[in-house]
Image (tube, rainbow, N blue to C red; front, side, top):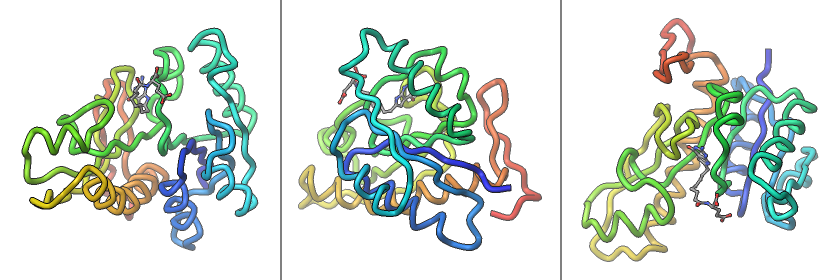
Length: 206
Ligand code: 3YE
């Protein structure tokens, strides 16, 4: 059956790419709702224009990370969410929440992990002087940006690149990589084992 999906977003361009992906007849996914921790962001507008339900869970209104994550968890349960896609979401999630959604939560990061973890990955790549970087879609594990890798796409760094021009090239790669990872997990072609390693089921078309 169709897999239900939740997203979090800022500018929402990755959300837009996922919304376009799930419209395809071949897609194994359906977007059931979008959650944002920031009110008024573009991603919420994109979702409501497409008739997708939205919720704002503003982290500033919670006294602890556990209470914030607990509220998110309740909303995900309420909507019967089966897979969570973090698309521009910038908060570190707590261990209990991450463990509960293990194998059911993907994040996208703007570098070829395990290089350049954390914030400003594009700036880190420019400063390191590497000639190739990219993006990574990975399962979310408790250690930030360290979960099992599902899809990567390499992006060249040009000698003329600024942080903005490189970020834009990486963003274009993200709009291919995230939909591809969604389908791999949604179709069952890729699963996360209890030991945190990935299993590829080659009998599933993907
Ligand atoms: N949480 C865990 N594991 C993961 N969250 C994300 C990925 C991921 C995760 O793999 N356990 C930078 C977070 C890095 C940071 O320090 N964030 C601040 C807030 C900054 C803000 O609100 O703009 C914080 O205190 O959480 C998603 C990507 C996380 C990016």
